[in-house]
Image 1 (cartoon, helix red, strand yellow):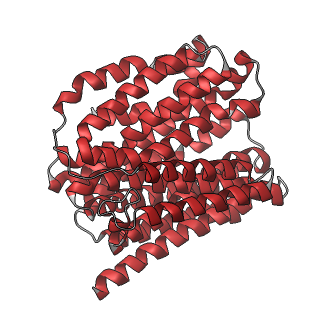
Image 2: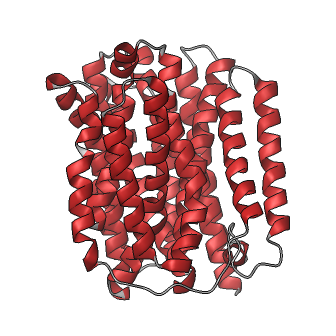
Length: 433
């Protein structure tokens, strides 16, 4: 049931991207304005993750998780019946708030529902589910759009959401812990992510404005930390970040997801402008990456129970870096052979990194702080992906289109390599301890 919910949230993000041209044409808006259908969802998820993790610790992970599913399902119905762009963007924002609760507490519920000895395997299956859903999203969206209009892309969430809510009673019930939420901290958290997201959105078109907004976002973070400096359970989990294993895992996750997003954004342009492939061919050449992640993710869960996770993360980050650098530096070869081999290596590396890194991130936190740990995991992922998007936009501004994809792939490789080095730092820290 938890995996079905994950499919619901991941698929929704993937199919919305594909539907943007259809939505823009149907609502008679510009493509730039239509992008807010995706952006509003991502922004809401960022705003909701940490507060939902905290609320889940207060009142129980199951309650907040199912409330998120209910909100996501209701907002999906509002999206399906939207007739104007403002209504659709607003519904997508509410949908993102529900999605934030699901992402923050989904893995927490997994931790509470399965035996400790199976947790590594379950996290691997979790990563495999994400990879398969991401890979299937464009195809499912295309199939729906071939027979119906874009409204049905959101309508399909409704029966799935109802099924998840009906099955929600099987989740383990937990009692909340005594803690308080500071309204000032909640406001500073929301403003921090809004300013960061708007700064990222403005960065390529207006670097000065974008830099100012991001600087104000950092100021909000400083204010948030100051407000919560005496809290035993802060919204930004500084108590967990004091643990070296948790801190290293968060930093490595941001680096790895920055490289992953940058690579996935660069590859379509590389395929089109460097190799001259058609749109249908690009889709096929993009499939080896998620297929490799789906293949390795359960195996890495098994390995995480037997091999030191820091070594697995370092090896995975290094493989991701080698695969991306190979695509960016080497000739494509006959039928894009280098690209296929490189993306397979990158996918295997990403899958090998993701499962053990998530495992140590979650297990290094006490069960009572599982909500904060799950929220921080999602925040690290989305922060990395946002940074990857910023980097891609910046590269396009500074490099010609013919060279930009290769440059982006090399920068992505550097980010993945940094994730490997951070993981190696954890090995040294653990050895010293």
